[in-house]
Length: 262
Image (cartoon, rainbow, N blue to C red; front, side, top):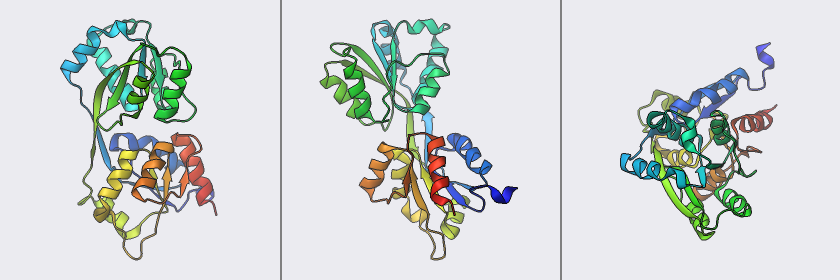
């Protein structure tokens, strides 16, 4: 029965942070793949107590709370639970986000999302928020990580919103130079390497020496989870072998299976 699995005999490299790998790895192994874990980035909570105090002192005045990643949701709500004992402390603030994974993380708290664009990009979110007609002098809090780009904040500010940001996590590159899994990747390669973030793409390029394939290694196809990741791949010159139809792990795996089908 296992011989009929669609990814049987395929080696798939996963580049997510180590704590985020299990979900994707399970999806792949269930389909018969051999998963190679290359955690190119490390994500950890990093919140300034001063910034947090400033935000929570005037939290009741915000009209919109905006999330750009599931990590932001996770660490923000850890702080909410630490400081408040009642979810109603959030008041009547409206929620907006980019991406289905981020949306799922918000819904897990039984919170309704009032703005989520179909295309998971900062431009699309800014345009959809502006289309609500609610941005003129609206107070907005954008929850970010250390590597978030300023595009979204700039577009919201241009739409006359009053925007504050709160960093709740940092993303750092993982050194794979002495990692035994990276050594195996160099020696044998993979059928595909999956990228779920721009930061993982950048780390892959920056660590090219540690990941350079041997002459007999399988040259992998590079898969992208969505538009922002694909843009970064194009900028650094990494050929895109396939892209998820929608920015989600399920969609990325679905396209991977179709791409590697015999």
